[in-house]
Image (cartoon, rainbow over all chains, first blue to last red; front, top):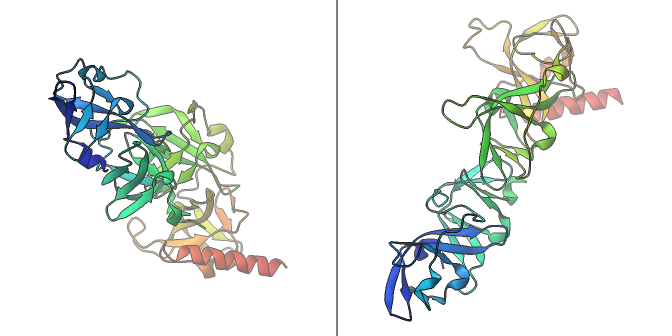
Length: 147
Length: 190
């Protein structure tokens, strides 16, 4: 599952069979190497935040939740930046040696666990272990070619 | 040797934490010419009209220097400091615009920049305008290797006469020239 596929997906409340909103941004927990949560745009719920742990399933056409109250206020403290809002997606990628490697095309996640699997830089793919941080200026990765 | 960069190439580079946030940019590079080492960087605020920051970045705090960014660990706390005490006197500090003279008394040229090995922050050579270059401001540049011990600088910068044989005309081939010069020095001292 790529982050780019996740963006734009409707969030479906299974208890009422209605759409709560659409996913318009995501936050990664980089030290934990997993998806932390999603922002639900045009939400009909109490807020715009949907934590990864409150999701029932991610399908090919919708993200499902079992009750609308799963969607709440955005937490004050987030473990990472907004991938779209802070322009991490499409933003620059630096090696830990200070060399620019290109731009971050996409991020691959495990659809079951939300675990970070790899980051995509154009036609290159780097394993999750190499990701050092995703910040407001750049995504920092370990680049074996830089050693 | 990881890569060579000129001192002025570093000016304006963003200082980025390994978690991906930019905290400052390089305002100037501070050298200890006597020991042939970078002491650290003075910093500017990260904005278009970035003002000078009181905080500085010392050599020990830097995790890597690359062509596109200076990388620091996420937990580095920048502290206000003054480098001046460490670099004043005749033996350090500013070498730009100093004349380079060989130990046999021949003027090689004028220093326009220093060349740094980004692997360990040491100065491996100087960019000089050759003394016989007519246009001193825009003319060609040469790269002069330094012995590992650095060079004596005072009124002028003294280099061994043999260094002139290893002068390179572009930075790309300079790493090799430094290596062969230093190898030759080691061979000679044995």
